[in-house]
Length: 468
Picture 1 (cartoon, rainbow, N blue to C red):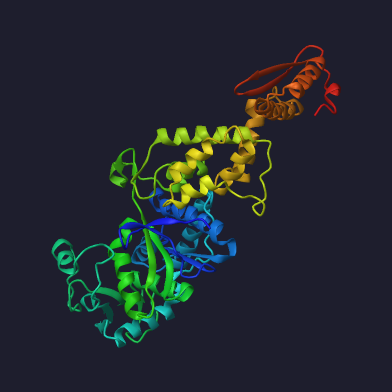
Picture 2 (cartoon, one colour):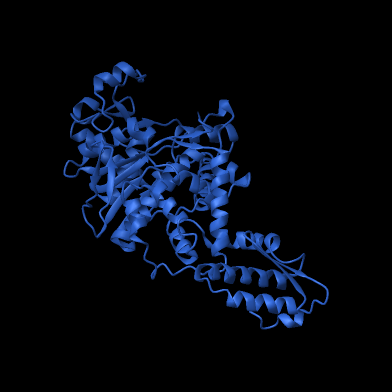
């Protein structure tokens, strides 16, 4: 079996991945807060962990991996958006959740096995909070429930910080209901105009951190294999998840391996609305950047390095993908059940998701179109939708003459035959077809860009019947 090595943020080193149960490999990734379109930084972890999901399913089996990614659909940002727009919270979260799924699908990301919404797990959150209070790790005051950070001796281990250093270097909320400035909210009261649920501490809503702890426990158990997300979530979100989960369920170890992707820049600068370089995924799609181009740019940089989105990189990615589609335009993909990816590609991915090396491997397959098609699809490229779109462009712009669809189709097939002949060095079939076309009154033009067929004087379409 392939040995997978992943950089574990918890230990700060690359480790051999050993699942708790090879028949049920479990991964949880923090998902979006659904109040607006996902920006391109939000999309990077989706693409990164989509690749890891594909790798795990190849190594352990399609039915032996459980991938969970949540939606946060109760949050102050959502409340604010509802107040300013006059729309209901349910309407906003329903719409933006579907936007997110549609935009991520455009990037070639598969849906996770489970996509829980925070509002579906309020009872489980309340139950976990009650246990934390009963065991002395949390306390209720003035309608709030807070976690006692200093009660958990390992707090700060994930992010590598001490509690005292955090207090000295951070802006923490000073509130009369807090015993300690570092204590964080598990539950907070809701006014009548805000979403709220009945609880032992009054009508209220959960804090952000408790959501993922409750959902991951319900869906994956007290111990699971991988927890992922952007490195901006390491503190405080992931640190707080570890604390409350390990205290609520000391029989488990929460997540064994932590993976964090680096942040995204635009043209060498931090993405910011004030700089005018803030883009959502939908912005780029609407500007004409194909989803697979965005995916290619993302995967060209290792997930643990800052990624710089530039138009130059996008143009180069589009050029490469167009070439891949050109050389595979006539081919049918091998069925997923029959396809076995080359070990060289798997080894690249198994080495802490070296997607840059994996893309280089794909690029070297341009002279083997069938292998290129199958391996590209394994990495989330050359979908049937994108190939159909490209094929339509290919027929209308690269081949044929004007509206002559029959010549365009003949040109496309001849170009495919010619490319195969370039591999085998046997051009006898190409020569036969070319001679027949000339006999039918067709001018044949061949170049590195493709084949063009133009009707000349004496063109007789009946002589093309049965030619191919």
